[in-house]
Structure formats: C-alpha cells, structure tokens
Length: 374
Image (cartoon, rainbow, N blue to C red; front, side):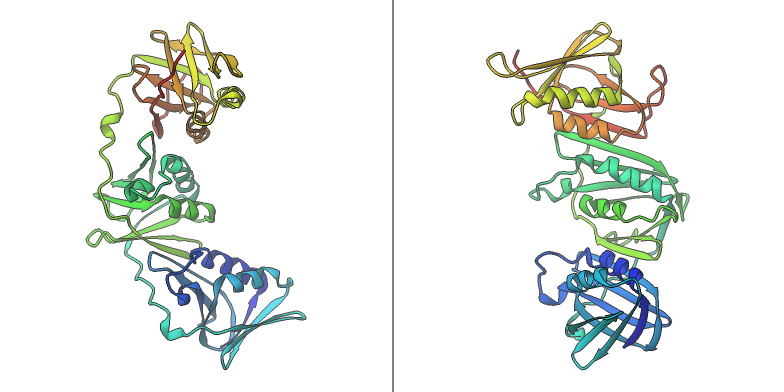
C-alpha cells in the first residue's frame, strides 16, 4: 500500500474510527484499525463485535492495499503530524507514516485475523442532525448507569410513521424526547432498543450540516446503523423487553407550577450546597412563591424563594437535586412547567416558551419525589 492523504483529514478520520476500540479488547486484533487504500480513497474501519465504525477520506493511491495497525497508537501519531501531506506505505511487516520531517513505523497486525464487519442494514429514514442530536441529549438523561439490567442502559426508539419517540428510564426518573423525521415507509411502525452510551457518542460526533440516516432491518431487528457525513456506525441492539412506562404519565395533573428555568436551576445549585450526599431538597409551593430548602435543624441549612405561577392546592415535594438539575438542563425553553398530583407520585416537567403559554410535549421528564422529614 502506498497512499498520500491530508494529515488533518487523516487525524480526524482515525480519531473518529478508533473511538469504538474498547479499552480492554476481547482479543488483541480488536485493538486494531483497518486501513484500505482503493479507488482514490483511504477507507478506515474498527469493530469490537458490538459496535463498528467506518470512515473514508480522499487519497492519492500509488499502490492499493490493506493494513491493520494499533488504532489508538495510529490516532496519537496522526494528531501529532505537522500540517502537511502525510504518506502511508507498507513494506514487509511495517506500516510507515511520514509527514514533513516526521516518520513513524508501526508493526502490522495479522489482517486474516481481523473480523468481517457487519452488513449495514437497509435505510429506515433520515432526520436533521441538530434535531437528532438534541433528542439524544434529552432522552439519554435517564439512562441507567449500572449494567445489571441491560435494558435500562438503553434508549427505546419507537418509530411510527413520521414520528420518533425516544424513551429512557433508570426507575427513579424517565426522559422522553419526540421529533418528526422522513421515513422510507410512511406506514412504518417498529421499535429498537439502542445503547444509550452509543447514542451519546453518535450525537457528539455529528456533522450538523448533513442529515443523519438511520438503517434498520425490521425483520432481523438486531442491528442499527447511523450514517452522517460519510461516517457509518453500526450497533448491536439490546435484547430484552423495555419496561411499560406509559402508565407513569398521569391523565390529569391537578397542580401546575410555572417557573423561570434558569432561576430554578441556579437556586437548586445554591441550596443543595448544604445537602448531604443523596439528601433531598424540599420545594414548598404556596401562593405565588416556592421555597427551596435543604439541610437539617442541627446541621447547615439553606433556603431560597422564587416567584411561581401556581394553579392548584399547596404542596410540598422533595427531590434528588442532581436528578432535578439533569432534567431541567435538558429543557431548551426558558420556562418550565411542573405538573403534580401528590407529594409522592412522579412529577412531570415540560418546557414552555412563554410564562403564560402552553407547555411543549416534545420533551417530557418524569421524576419520582423522595421522602423527607421536617
């Protein structure tokens, strides 16, 4: 193989592709990134049997060929190269990378041991990259961190015609984001359970100038693909039944409270400074204000009051402050509407553009209150 590429393009492509390489690969060959010089492009790929990544950049090809080398090492080398052309060539058991006066030699890995990449499924539809990235950010708020229940580490993606609903829950809270997109089949009705960590990774690397194409085989339902700006990722879906969570949303909420979202987040952060780890902060709604408080009588304490547009009876609720800020931070509108039934049932949070307007249901965050003592 002999190829000439732009060094900045090489660094970007190797960094993006090698990000899926696990810290502790199941076998040594999975720590490699595969390079293939062919038809005026340098194609890069990485695979760990669960997630694959494929990218390509323009290249001047003197000799077509294939090489597998340590991915993380190549990424470190590529980002350190001077802003000049880079040259890649193989000879014997070595890949040589040169740029300017810098030259590196990497040991080739056995190409025959490298696994075949999965076949990318058929196109399911496409969506604006900004819309998709924002929905991922909102939905993944409630993804569980522990691995003992794999289904809770995923985001349920429900595709119904031109509407997509993404839902996640860790049993203490639930986040749901909805958006419209362009499906290949207007009558589409299917579900996929995708790892939340993978979706967050996809969102971080999106080129927002181009749409995202989602690929999915509705018959096999084991793999989902994500295409954006020449980059293609695939991921094995989580096998399991996502909890039935629709019943957690109340049909009617007798108590509504509208607050300035930024002011509320700031107040929560200040008041929670005195709260012990995992201790709740209390919110007392009465009249036209809410009083936030934390701490016990024989310890440090803090209180702060905020103006609120209240409709319904007085109520006191308590929340994990971190969970509260997580959900509020995912709301993009300047105001938040809290909808409550009782002090112990899940509270729904929605954003709204105007203080006296209607709430948006494009993002719905449910948080279960904590028990507290006066």
